Length: 465
Image (cartoon, rainbow, N blue to C red):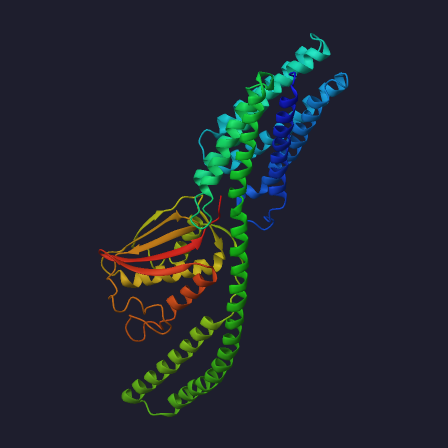
């Protein structure tokens, strides 16, 4: 504790007031943030950071009280123990936050980092036990307080800061623009760990000033980083409204189409039965049989088209869950294995890459695209599937070496009933249904002619780290 002049007392009071308030604001900025339904993984760890903010704010304001009234009471063992305990609790909360952050980052040093932290904690605990009987209690508490600042203050600040920086670099989001604030928050945590763990307040008021600046920097950049949850919430609300509006339209269209399909299928079934009866009554004439076959094929095709229209207008319930992209592609490939048995398949997808969506419906999209690729690739039989992240989305690219689609046609192939296949080989509803499924998933499906082939590009929302 250092002696203060009246001017120093005013400066220290102001600094500690802002200092503690900054940490309380850090806690409240987390508590009052709406991240209950967030899919961003760090949201689960934010309550730990809030605990650090509140406990550390209480610690700094109680320190202010002890400084201001140091001449009016005797420093007891209880006060010293309380001072060290609340400091340790706050740093443990920050250390726990950094420890849990290790599970969110893709870093090959994570395992060794956890081992090192475990060794340091064991060594610190053994040191506390070993020194308990060898020192006076006051000296024991003061020494422990210094060790807490160095090991937990510096260590927790550096650990939380480094993991936040690595996480921020991995968390690149074009929509939210949150990568840089996470990185800067991590840097501010490291600097605070240094000022609070290495620099002692006994050095002068300037140390308190540096700590206050670091606390304000943490608050500022964390506040900016946490805006990602506000934007995510806005997008969720927009998606819910859009989905509700779209579902209502599809419901109305489905009811109308169901009625039309029923009215069409009834006379078609009657016509098919009449063909069967007529075939039994007519003489065995090749020309007559050929005409009957043509009539029956036409009726069957009309029935098939009416069923495709019904599928297109059908109200699909989509459940959004994390899906591993590689497993999704492997499942789709297994379903069309018989069509691709003589194809060269290339799969270049990170096993950790995930998207949000309905696995059954997205599998239907991939199967449809792969079947089209098999039909188109008659000579060069190869299909490649790759995926990568782009901002808040995952881009999947399926490439086949079949003929290109004419430029004046490529924009029309996803329209209902438009097909480039020979008459009788397709209804033109496959890609239309695929596009509809992608729209329900807040994604996109686009076709691109490339050199010696065609690329189908799917864009889906990724599972954000």
